[in-house]
Amino acid sequence: MKMKIIKDNNPLLRRTSETVELPLSKEDSELLDQMLNYLKLSQDEEYSKKHNIRAGVGLAAPQIGILKKMFVIYYKNEDGKETKYELVNPKIIETSVRKCALNGGEGCLSVEKPYEGLVHRNFKIKMIAYDNIQKKDVEIVARGYDSVVLQHEYDHLDGILFYDRINKANPNEQLDNEQII
Image (cartoon, rainbow, N blue to C red):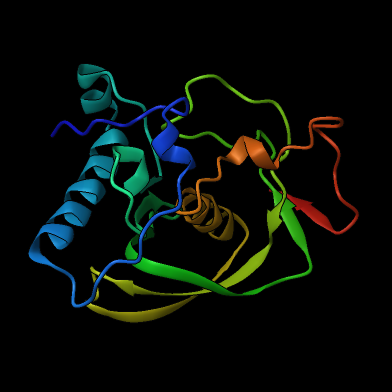
């Protein structure tokens, strides 16, 4: 299944997404399912090699040129447990004072060149959204890596890219209350 990921030089990625009307239309629901399927396939080594696509753990609607407040997340942790969401109109309602950052920095399907530096995120967040998989409103409490992934995709809905959050003067500076993951 081919999905066209737009790159970070596309001005659409810098725009704010629109709120999605609920109940979800059949088109929006199918689009979310397709986006989730794309992520799953991107993590299949054979498929991604054959189709020349990069593996991703999250994909926001703006990354495929659709300015709607929707994103999907899919990955398995070390013990094989799946994390998967098809979130619509997400809103972060609580954040921790404690910060975290990924040791190797962050990457993005829309960003082809690597950016050196720590992306400071909240270690813990509470997010509310409509989840198309569960077909209901959900409240997600996420910590560490899960929190980073949710915040990364959430940023796309506001036209923010991960490298906007890197300190240009001191890219690898660790904050006092920050955990490196």
